[in-house]
Image (tube, rainbow, N blue to C red; front, side):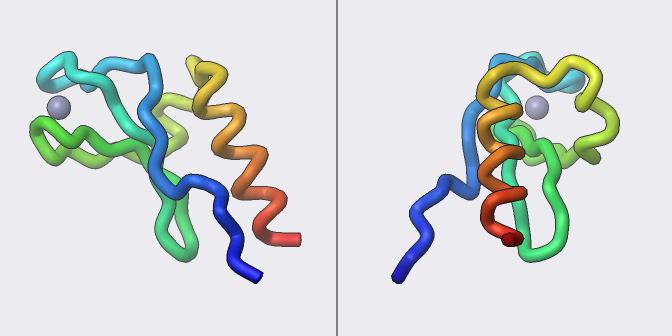
Length: 67
Ligand SMILES: [Zn+2]
């Protein structure tokens, strides 16, 4: 049965480089923030202290996915 949790969700955080909305995304082994506008990629740790609801929901799904 497929797991339909999103792998890429738009957040309310702004990209430090271009001020566009950052997306939270994950690969197989890591979660990171990425900017679709300028293709920048940032470590989650850099933004975790200002995580918004979209990020928190995303991270909950990541943890569920590992069980
Ligand atoms: Zn950007």
